[in-house]
Length: 102
Image (cartoon, rainbow, N blue to C red):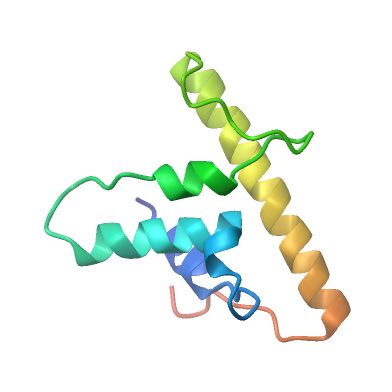
């Protein structure tokens, strides 16, 4: 994993009490589980429960997709959702996370 990407995701604020219900929050939980366990994998079922496509439809985890197609589409959607979160933070006047410690 890219250390700068991990640090940026882990430093993003989540609304109080809503970490479990957001994509970024679930990504933070997944990264934390990977960092704090002796195992090299983690079951991301909770991440897929909150992850939705551009139309707001839950992901069908039983649907087969090409690995590259899947990665690119999920990455694009995660970046899009993170950008929406940053936009909301800017509007609220809250301080934005930085990656200066990376």
